[in-house]
Image (cartoon, rainbow, N blue to C red; front, side):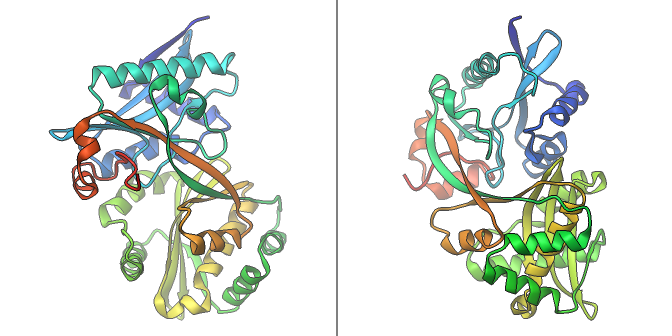
Length: 352
């Protein structure tokens, strides 16, 4: 049977959700809830989901966002801190190669119809689909990140889960976790406004201290608005004698935990509040039967960050950014201007 490709509409949300839930390789980033997050963070962008059909059944999708203005048109799968997009194929797709080829053709059609000046696709960390067909879409690998993923063990009881977490850690990290757990922190999942505000405040302070780009209130609000009620995000909060000491915001989908925003109050950092938070959240995930903890992408220059995640038993899974820029304006414009004109979108590698 032949494959046809269509753009999904809001009326197709239910069948798209079913497709995502039925795919073993689906990530949080593929869910309609996360699409709502991105739409709220980037309200001037347009969601375009390409769906490959075999008869009446969806056998593959490619989620994208388009940012178009007077400065050009940029398509990402997906925008916002390197969110993974890539093809999402049905587990029972009869011919994955035919399906992906049809989606590539659909992508080329969109690029032509909408005069797209630059494309970037962030490949799946475990099952990349775009890389083998990038050249057929006029794209090429042009950037990469070191994905780090911890494979969580099976343990039905919390005590055993903690034993397994400690066993998977390198010795130094194991000692830091034990130190953190001895500090009498009270760690709970919180939905309180005050705790979200404290998390945001100390996140800003922490990012300012290292010269990083913080997430802003509207970004956290988008995550909370669209994911919290569904149980797709959790804010773990650590307190000491009632004082806010740190927090950890994670995202959840099927077997995956996405390590999203860690926060440690400066005065509690050396007491290993973050280690205690991570260990607690990991144990919860293990007891719930989750199997993959995604630490997110690390730049090759971030040796300290890579070492920290490696200490928790994370395994490297390099993933690539696949793209191209055709609009001369986007090729020539200085990075600062592109960041202003296409916030949250990846236009081109600045290191090149």
